[in-house]
Length: 606
Image 1 (tube, rainbow, N blue to C red):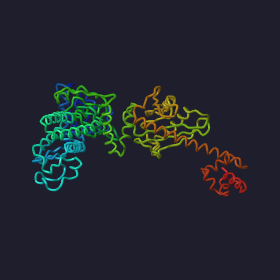
Image 2 (image 1 turned 180 degrees about the vertical axis):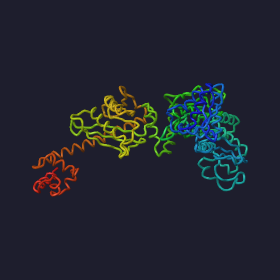
Image 3 (image 1 turned 90 degrees about the vertical axis):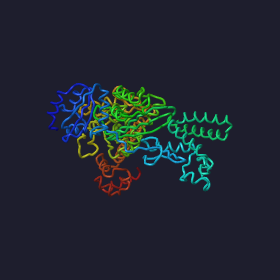
Image 4 (image 1 turned 45 degrees about the vertical axis):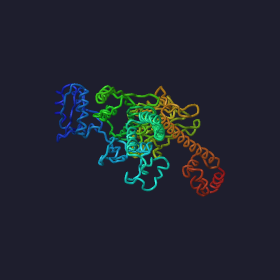
């Protein structure tokens, strides 16, 4: 509890309702949090109210607030600009800050008679630089592609000093280098090629091809067929390289595509930047979970775009953020052109959005020792079911029986999208005299959930983020009263199968949610449903076999149900019974050696 709360509440009661920025400070008057507000009084009051329900991070910040300042602005837009500027200047401890673990990368055109194009991590050496780029991979790919398309030298020879020294290398003979080392290419011609390569890197394939086609036609008219042939080959190489780009791009001229993946303890956001019909750059950032009620996309976009001028006309997002109008105003003002946010539903833009999400998911997977598919599957499932966050710990249940015999249930656990087999549990149905799947499911869930506070069982004591039942609407309706009766708020859904026993949909109350349009979530639910069915059926078969063996044992004179049960409890499996001697069987059953011999003979014939 912060002892300064009475003072802070008193100060806030007199605060203006105008828009502005508030600046939280600790005992040393260091800035620990900066926020904007449409209504300063309403927003700041929410931090210091009695009985707050803050997230741990916000609660920690509030506990350290000694005092605060504020700056009134004329509009929410002005407050946004001021907030972004102050956050970048002060980098407060409790603000969500962009964390990119990579440095910047550059493309260098060396300053020499015959320049080279290289990828660099700094700008120390003399030359012209393009960038900065946040993705080292894309920077290297751009340089490699330009050198390959324009057949530029990548060897370590120095020109013109090494002209004519030795034979051309293999790259010349396989048409990956123009053979500058032969000394037959003029400096003017080479520098013109370098200029075309730079133009290609800056503007992409379309504009470069148009300019080179015009130059090729001019050369042909001058009867300079050798030059025209060189340009023809270069145009073909550019077109071939651009086809590779279209695998990723396919006609998106200029856009930023923002993909979000939420993982255990963090959120990862990737931005794929397309400029002039090609993937130009990529950046990935990691965040701590946001304050309750904050839209992570809004927070990210305000910080990422503040101060930038290289903003495309379209920004592709997976949902329209709460403050979309404010974001579009910020982006339009800074870029000097109208900028719109787009949420695609299908087509090529949806594929690009999926690619951006995959990038985010793979970074999340690397950080948490998981696969990108697992991260995406849990995120898709959580969003589909309306959960606040992806379900980390999932329990699934299935009832299995043969008529009213061998009635059992299986419980499996998936943690982080993977089976957690040491947490699996088996249940024998005790309260149902006859086959009753709904009553059995109620019994099993009640027995399991009553152990939530059982500290002796590491897994039974955990509250699942999601419960899935192998069944439809009836199973969900049967179980929900049990959940309410125990005062729990665990989401429960059913896994519906089609006539061929394949996963078809998710049952939610009286409705069904189609899931086959979300590939990752569909595959995860199918795995869970198949695994819980396998687990419960195998338990039912093993129970049924034991009952069969037990009934066969009672055919020996002097062996009733109780003595047969003693034998099964002692030896557990038919294999162990067969390995036992007549004396061991007689001792376990509590009978004489003659009956023990009869038992042994029967067991050998099972």
